[in-house]
Amino acid sequence: MKWGKSLEGLLAGIDHNIVQSSRYTTVMCLQLITHVARLAEESQAGDTHPCWPLLLKYQGLLEDYLQGERLQALGCGVDLQRFTFDSEYQRDTILGLAMTEEDDKFQLAVELGSRHNVSASEIAARHVTSLLLQGGDTARLATKLADSRLNQLLKSDSEQACRR
Image (cartoon, rainbow, N blue to C red):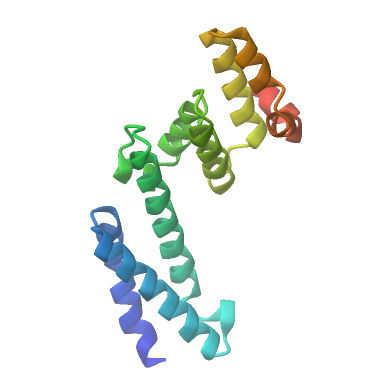
């Protein structure tokens, strides 16, 4: 298809823009990804369309970037460019984020873990370990440890968490 080759070149230049973008560029990238998905669907080639792998790649990059923005908004001191491209840094960031008493940061760690293949039980185990080591108010600690969602996460893949 005519637009496939030129679109491929356009998409190839987005890597740099996603990482060093303004909100406007991020919106433009979202619109481009949506447009390419619609074109692929309309061509009735679906996921066999030649642009499909590129679409998935850039959709993933954009998701990483947006999650990185959430990390920055929470004041987690994350290097956004490194988080977007470095899988080991992503893992360390997610597990580091789990070492908090703040529920919103812990929930974000769980969400990020599901996207970046860090098991929920490992994140929960890191969270519990951190809570126990920090000490503090025992009543509050008991309440956090009794949370049914936390216990479900711990049980979700407990063998994987114990191996680490």
